[in-house]
Length: 467
Image 1 (cartoon, rainbow, N blue to C red):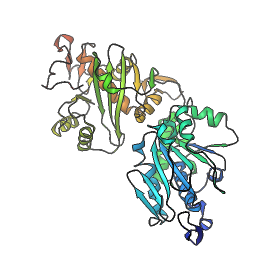
Image 2: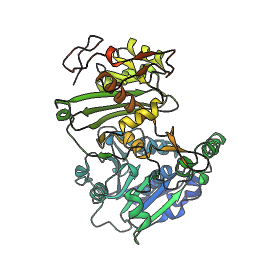
Image 3: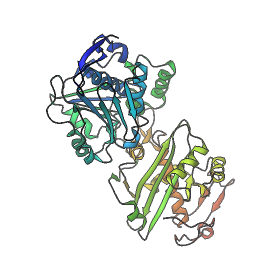
């Protein structure tokens, strides 16, 4: 790649930077994104399936155009600030190395940012967990002219987007124009993104849909995954495969809301009961869901979560300790008693198996549906699951009385904790304890055998309930 001389905004001396006019954009991003790459309006919106190149294309666009425009700076936003490090930040670093430009960029961890060393331009990383602070962001030289919102579907309130949108404002130097890029999976057609950018686009908006079919670099394994998904779960294939808007038919939970609340205040209420549920996974995510039931108002407050794939029991135990929940009663999937035992030996001594009953999944769902659910905005995985958790369909598209496996991991963990609480507090008779609902191989627990629960008393393993 040849070099060209440009004026250094930090001194009177010219500097040499790569000449990106000689770079093959097609060689970097392939087909399917020409309009997205060259759009000159303010809003550049891409909904797409998994493996559709939308994040890679956006990251390449930022890097190449920043190095071509010495006055440009970029703000990268996700709903929760901490999720940038292992996603957008890591992706941009990966592409810097793939282009052989690691000597020109400097990574800074606290605060999280990438700095283009020849000019001092910055890529800043922030979270929607503090949207008002984003509007006050400024840069030491040049202008903040570009914004990338990754996983924009997680932003459930259009008003929050409007606040962040205003961080890109003011007069731009010659040759620069403001650009707001949004990338996301279209999980639900009722989302404000559809109405604003796809149903009613203005002249400043480009809204496109892409999918894995335009990704020339997918492996045979990847393509086989989508072929299998098409047969196994046609509804999910429409969203995760073809990038079409998700449907709302058959949603299991509808009585819920996303909003801020004071966790400490809820925990101090007279009839508050803490709930901790854990669903084991490996190729599927392991999910830990932390919530509080206010029995007086029949409201469950979900305030913390952890989802992670490919983790072993020691990793789970360490994460629970890191989150400060090692002393809590954590209700786990009783189908894996060996994992529960291992967690206990690793210091999670109050890990227990979930209670079971005939048709326990459907029955547990019915019990959970009786509560209003309030969810902290930071619980992005739980919010996605509860908004997508739906009853399965047969081959004719008719809803069945069982949930889909997809988006069920946090839902299962949460249900375990609710059902165990109902058992302990005497609200359920005839519970079967263990991995099977076969009464011949499991203990039938009747209410007369059950200890009356009192949060002020010691529980059966000698530990105090911690609020």
